[in-house]
Image (cartoon, rainbow over all chains, first blue to last red; front, side):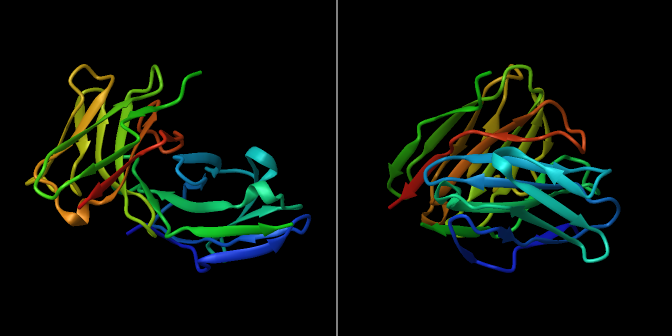
Length: 115
Length: 115
């Protein structure tokens, strides 16, 4: 069965420092991976996705993610964190064998960026 | 381009009462999803529609939950009767199709509190 894991409940970084939010995945077949961000009392906003091709995927708001097949990881990164990046981040994988298109989400990681 | 619309944004009910949520997807999106997000967890799919047909409802508690998308556009999700454990955020999402690469776009969600 497809699954993703986000090993950190919370990540704390200082504004201006680089940030990394970790995600590992387990899939049968090719992985289709997504990152979403959720601000308080808001729905999920799409950041980026990996389908195929370049292992470094660039997305919205200066975020990028690195796909690593050997480590089965898809970590979210940003070179310089902003206080406004503080939010809940979800990694997700497409349920390919089910062929329904549903996303399977991780538990989420809270990012706290301090001034 | 207008996003996914949901209403109401908040709802508080007593257990055993009924409640209904409404969703209007992005114009032209054939696929509509309802996810349940319990506090501290990632969203989980309840039901998926392709146009007005059900693609996946395997995780929908059918003894109390129902959903419809009669004209292939907007959708309603109903809970009757509600239980305490139904307290959650109900997220609606839409995508162009069910392709593996299709991005799902989420609405702001409805926060349900069952007392």
